Length: 501
Image (cartoon, rainbow, N blue to C red; front, top):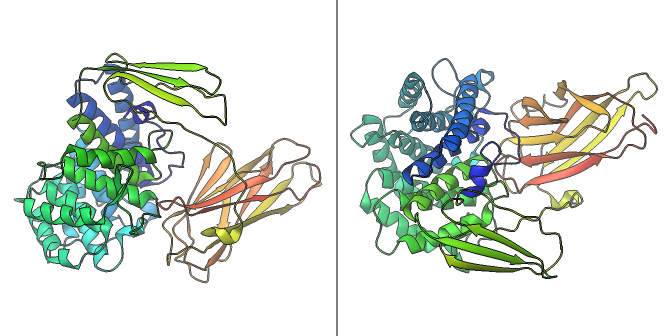
């Protein structure tokens, strides 16, 4: 948990301009506080830091609230609240009340709104635009969404005696035989664990175990049987399996050793900040890792880790009870090279090597997205302004994307006019490629699109304004990526149309 604790404000190197992304600033603090409190490691300083992030996230999330008590990615700019995000906010607000003031009215309003979305068969209707499209598709749409909402309500300490939970569990049991998705089964496993249904737990874990991908002592689950795809969804479903194992009585044959093999794989996926690739995989994985850390916590032990460089330079890290929460790091200056790692003592420590490097943009035909950019405008004026045109096309394996992020860096000496962003060719199908929001993060403009259909090309323009003249301008970079499927991305560059600016 060390890196996540060190980087509570920035677990992901990605923008945070929607109601769901904001919750990443909120939810992980709860899991870390619960873990530290349950193991008697919570200090006033850590509590104050985490509580501050909870207050900021809480206040900001209320700006995405609808008058009926629901929540959506872009608040009242959206036509209605979203069932999935409302459930996410509801359970997070309820858990945070132990540490900061959260008005119970907002939790009650969200639960009441969700209850009104429940159908006669106990399943929940999907309302509002759902950017997490892996929760959609045929039976799995209704079933997976229902499992998520039922588990969220049970995390509020409601049991099967609650009418909403009781009807929801009935829906899940009746529809279970139609489920083929590994993601859905993993979520159902966690849901029935919270419900205390040991028979369903046994059935689901046996099915999931048969689908597990095991290699080198590590275990995880994938959307494809050979494990060739590793993205945020794989981490999320693996996190749900671990959550299901750690949230209920131990199942025969699936003890801590089995869970440890899952944890080993999850550790390998963590980024340098302690998060993962996107919001939901980070939230689910950190919640699961916190529960595992509590189950395996040992208040004793000390370990010395020695890192020896190729030339014999030694870095030593001492881990003991007084500094076990401290994230220790050191820069390795001999790259490339073979390093030796040696650990002595008694205890469990985690060592990670983090390598960062730059690569040129991949060829368009190898990317899930095809993106191009160009700049045009008047050069010989006192304060030049240029129009940047960005053309984006989705060419991936799915019929449509999740939310899409376009990150536009201005040329040196320029700033982006964020109010100038517009979709040029939106009349062909106004439901796709819509600009939901534009943020300015540092010097860059971050554009949020609702979605793109496969093969559909969209053109966007924005204005960049000169702040200071710069000679010999270098190209500026434009990046496009799917918000959840972060491996689906592409990068391009554009240059100045003027020889000197």
